[in-house]
Image (cartoon, rainbow, N blue to C red; front, top):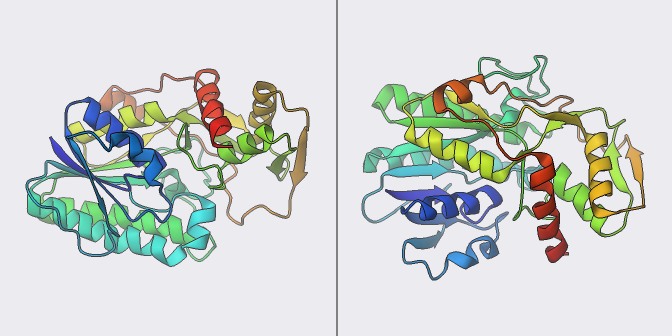
Length: 311
């Protein structure tokens, strides 16, 4: 296949580029690099099957030649980023998705949109199945990201129903691994970075909020299978191994040998921060034959090693 991956210089986008190239496909990466980093794809510079276009997908997208698939992963994805770039986040979810869908339609290509577990907001149902409609504060500080993704899903399904476009929607749950930005504000880089600097780990609230940490290779496998499937409705991709943020902080300190301990901070929590996060992955198992394989004990050490090199 010849595929376009938007957000290619980001954490997830760069790993997707690797996977498609390893499968023998031709990849065109696209990114405006406001939150991504070209270092993430620097190792692909000599690959004849890879090319890169620096472009903001909120503007009209032009790609010469045929395309078999468009994977739309462009978007700020961490609280620090979308609170810093709220309007750009909304634009890439709305205008960027519209432009990417229009390109896929013109090229008669499959389209896959990277959605998010934030669709569910601070959930009142646990675990979260794709049939749950969510509990989202549309005007809160996180609304720019949540609503951008909700609109992107709606627009994607409208193209599927109106134009018969082959569309796919992946709802991504907490994913970690090498190439995450150390300063992106998410739990894994925050805590690992503090531990490697010998600082106390900051846990907000009482640490009882839960997350389900999925290694990046499992996410990429799920996305790849979903693209090749014939299923148009949203599919959760994430691990069902749930733990409290406090327990995760303890594991990070144990792994890194950090003796500085843990401190609790209530006042700095972002409004709307979800208290529970665990996917119902029944749909992914039944339709894609997918389930996560990499345990936290297997995925955290290479992630820590990556951050140690960055620091």
